[in-house]
Length: 140
Image (cartoon, rainbow, N blue to C red):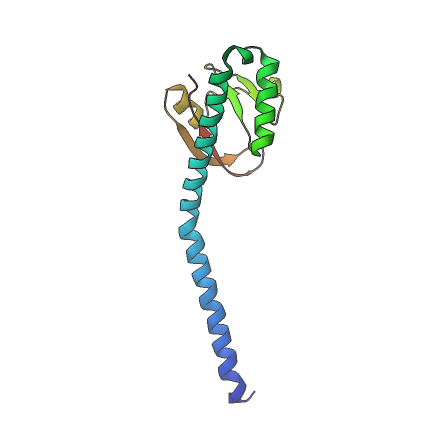
């Protein structure tokens, strides 16, 4: 190959490699910021749902009404919502029948919420086999 073509090809290759390195470093640096923002948004949505529950009060005392409201709000917000009792029993879930779900009391974010604090965790889902972000807030 003549020198006339080698120089532009070397330049294009060097530019592609450099662009790849910049993209990789940017992704690695921005990922934690994105996940922090996601957790903040999830906490805000959870607090909004808590306000809906507090406002409806006795209207959601029965299990089916709580399940229906949770499913409707989860669908409307395109999120998963789970209501957990103080003993870790799932009372309602926007995607699954709560009767089929295991006790959640030993999950890190739930333990924090049961202690009265906002709980957050990033961990592998054993069901989905991928990293998921979880946020739990205590309900009044």
